[in-house]
Image (spheres, each protein chain N blue to C red):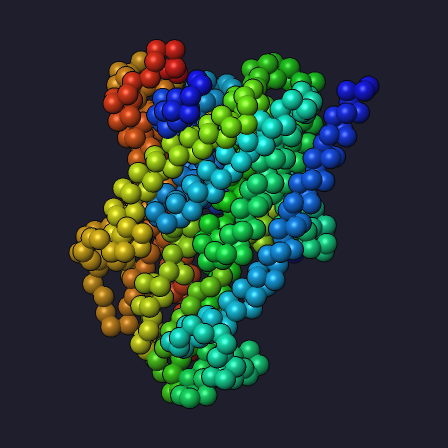
Length: 199
Length: 202
Length: 177
């Protein structure tokens, strides 16, 4: 664990939340992002759950990819293997949440197992392969990506609550205005770029 | 929903996956700033959703209920890998440009959604058509978004310059926010032209 | 119990069928893929030199010396360079003339930049800008539409960081001599 690798991991973590937010810059995780953001509490709950899943699945997938798939020349199977790992881990997370936070379990309902098909989760694993991150960097990236999702969805939920009394044109109600709000947020986050320079 | 015509009308217009159901945009919205990339992604998606729906439908009577989702995921991922392998072999440059977004077709909510909502309960041929229709509806909208984003953001259409050098490129269209705004506009316009039935409104 | 057994068996059977189909496709396309990769680098070198895209003539025209290539006919040299991009290393092949003063061509062929944004560095229009640029003065990437000096090239709209990294990379070429 060299110092430069730790620094690099921290930079990647911050970058993944702000300058390269998984939802607002990379467009991943939109489906649940738009549906769950109607309510602040479930948004924060889902965001936390996603962050939990992304951190661990990124780490596990890194290990499997670099210690198993690469040596055995089975790299082309990574899509299937990654999604199976994610499905398994989400199942495990579901059981843990049901046990330790039953209120959250009931609030999230079907959206908990749907984390499996959340593009953001699989996306983080795929990106870490492409960008050739080390193990520590992957953990930073997984955590940062998940937190970025949490920040994004919490903000959107807050925004939607704010405009709940506004007169939104009928064709735009619901998904339409949510998408536009997301666009404005994405624009705001673009302002973060340049904040972090990775050497 | 019986005739092929009905299925197509439903998939492309009434229940369009992008502006009605707002599903499955994750994986492709990212590449809508270039028409060529969008086209390849959409073709890949049409292939995957129609073949997956077909396969899920064929297996629907033998698939054990409890592992339904896992089976669907396995089928979908297999087709996506097929696409990925074929792209790497025959279109390596585009494959490199699209990067991880091809793999992300697996998590595309449309495919899972249709597999669960339609293919699992219908015969193979209608299921195949439904997948095809959904894919086409999706392609239509995304190509439309790309048709606005690429010229405004880069001054080109399919890589060919269509606007003069002096045109100030709209960076916002080349970057993420542009896609969100375009999507919002498309939803707005399509809901004006063809208002959803009362029960469908979220 | 019987239901669970059937479920497990079904999954296993399905996995085998899927794995079999994938392995079959992989094997049949494997040769094509490795041929693509071997040719890819050679094609980059040819393109950087401005030669026609014909790998079969590679060995007759280009001499491979260690980690760089020399074009027998003109004495031009091509180097493989790489530097950190915004997200992942950027690999490029850059060809310079025999006097080592001017860039003949550059090809960015491997990078992890955002598709459609930083990823556009591998598009022909971007790479063509570097042809004829001198190495004795710094090469700058400037915002499109602004005023351009002789040794300036257009950066990519919306990809400031990637453009910056490319600028850093390109100005390291003169250190290679």
